[in-house]
Amino acid sequence: NGATTSNGLGDPNPCYINGQLINTVATSTSTTVNFPVGKVVSGVSNWRPFELTVKHTDATSVAYTGELIQSSAAALGYTNAAGTDKVSGIRYWDIARSVVANLTDATIKLYYKSDNGTNDGVTDFGNLTTVKTTGSGSPWIDIGGTATANGTGSIGFSNAFTSFSKFTLANKTDGNNALPIELLSFDAVFNGSAVELTWTTASEINNDYFTIERSDGTMDDWNIVGTVKGAGNSSTLRNYEFTDQPETRLVVSEAELTQNPETVLYYRLKQTDFDGRFKYSSVVSVKLKSKGEIRIFPNPLYNETAKLDLSGFKENEKITVAVQDVMGRELFSKIIIMDKATDIAVLDYFQKLHEGCYFVIVSSQKEFYKQKIIVQ
Image (cartoon, rainbow, N blue to C red):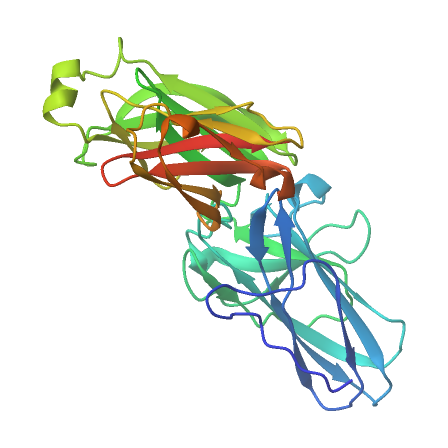
């Protein structure tokens, strides 16, 4: 009792409890307490704190327990609250209170974000609301709250409530908040003859299909290059892939690549629900090169070292090898001076990583390569 926490918004990255946080309150004065909670899933960091204001009739000690649950609220199967048509397909907060009969009421403020891999899908903040349950299998109840912005912001404080259970974000019936899927990663890699596109979702709600669109560099004109069927409803990790074949779509010759060795293509995903609603992913780019490549093997990795083929680089060339997670954070870096004995570099860093998707970045003064690798 009396201990304080911030909401975890630190420098350079947010900080949080990766699990349950118990906050004890023993006062009859209206009190606001911070719960800097979050969750790490497949190496992806999800910072999602909440603030709780409670009013007690006396100063008896009460323990409040809060945790971020990184799975679909919609998949719980509860009936939508009146005036809403969907809840988050990404996450919810589970909040409990010790059995002490001194609660007058409480209100809550939730935080949401839009960044690489952890997008909450808030695209119409004026039609965002907070909902909660009152028990197992009960319908969601709209408890309101005022949101601050699209993308990244907060909603709260809510209307007063007198019970604790599950809380999440919901879209009002006339709103256009996406909320349907959590896209953990989206990447494009040129393998020397085609562009390989890969993406991973953590959860999907009513996801009919993905459309892959490409721009030649202006990002004004987008062309459809293919579609991939979605999973519909899913609360587990799903991996997707699509290859943009050169003979049918990429109009880039060897001569063109020689004249302009950094030809760039841009890709984006359009995700469409069964009801026709859709949203776009962030844009990724890929540089087309006429020669040179890197090769990592084995891939996927099963608790073993990775071998990196650097035979395309010149002797005495200075090479930087780095490992990033799907959020773009650098986890490992080393410098290699090329000689005849270092065509194959051994990387044992992957044995320290959790299961998930990572990227190996190999760069020199003139070259840059990015290769996806899966740790299982």
